[in-house]
Amino acid sequence: MFEYMGDRISNAIKNIKGMGKITEENISDAMREIRMALLEADVNYQVVKEFVNNVKEKALGAEVEKSLKPDELFIKIVKDELVSLLGENYVPLEVNKKPTIIMLVGLQGSGKTTTCGKLANLVRKKYSKKPLLVACDIYRPAAIEQLQTIGSSLNIPVFTKGKINVCDIVSEAINYAKENNNDYIIIDTAGRLHIDEKLMDELKDVTNLCHPDETILVIDSMMGQDAINVINGFNEALELTGCILTKLDGDTKGGVALSVRHLTNVPIKFVGNSEKLDGLQEFYPERMAERILDMGDIMSIAEKVEGIIDENEAKEQAKKMKKGSYDLEDFLNNLKQIKKLGPLENILKMMPGARKMGLNNINIDPKQMAHIEAIILSMTPYERKHPEVLKATRKQRIAKGSGRSVEEVNRLLKQFEQMKLMMKQMTNGNFKMPF
Image 1 (spheres, rainbow, N blue to C red):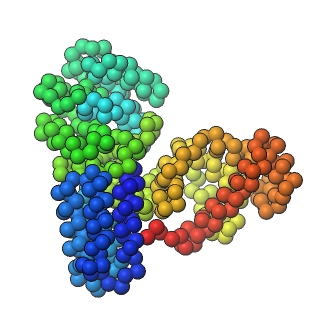
Image 2 (cartoon, helix red, strand yellow; image 1 turned 60 degrees about the horizontal axis):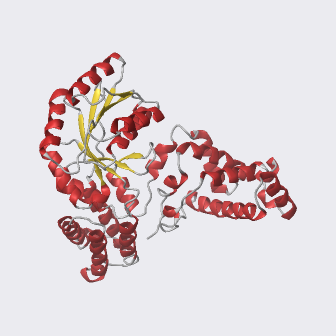
Image 3 (cartoon, one colour; image 1 turned 135 degrees about the vertical axis):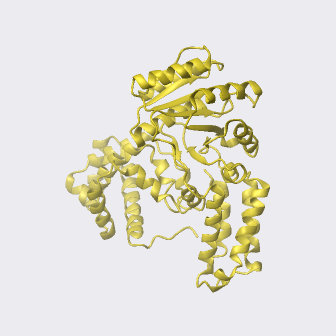
């Protein structure tokens, strides 16, 4: 997400690096490049104009003139303005009321039904809630069956009464949830191809009946600037508490995320970052700004690994990385832990400098992970701890034992050495940022 826009902005900032003084003349090219990057990423023109003016005004201010490193302060100004556009602060989901009622609304094709499953999965994992999915899309063919399939795959119950009145479904679902101790109710409502009176009247009826704690609009981030009109249309009728941007993983522009909060005042609560049912991510403006600028998202990585990777073991391995004594035995243990985190490429994309190193476009076949494990497991414990002893005959034996080729064994060893070097640089504070 944001690759094109982020690369353009990062390149513009890179040209300022090393300047002893920031002047209107020497930042003019950078500001022009940033303006074009935002416009081409489908950010609203008025938003772009305000952003550029704010950055320019602050960059030419007294604080920058007095700074010993004006180029670094310029980067901070750009980042802070991005954070401001994205909404300043993280807006959490309501989780304390029992039962908490969430109503998801949106147009057809936005990914609303799948998002219901993703949200139920997230609140169960993160907040230890017991969710209930409620099938209220009685118009779209197979919508109810789709939600039931999603619920079955996640082992989350789905309440359905077929195609009867929507308010009756919701009323019975709330009673069912109370009887079965479900503390989270997620209602999948019907969408339309466009906003119409019938759609809004039905949603208003459901709102008046159950008074949802959250009314969240699910919107396709690929809609571009028209998304603003859709958000405003729903917000006027329903008083939205937030929105979820879907398909952000497939939209390299991502400009809608920079326009939504500023133009509608509706906070972005989540973004869809993959098609899988764990592909929903809470939206933190500062973290997202850092990812746009290729600064990485270490906090999100830390949250993912929390509870999966043992803290003491992680500290011990950090010491080994710093000393350069990290070995293939450690690597094998890490691989087993990483598999629990989901697709590895999603983690790599959040590393500092990911785009510069080409990590954002990597697609890792799970079979490749299995092949790497097979190669390492075909080594003796001594060889894993001392890979420098692996000469031709040993490599041939390992290749035969793992069912892989000698070339693959060599490639793994080379990549492992490169990774060790990068880890040592990062732990010693010598890792260079992309600008």
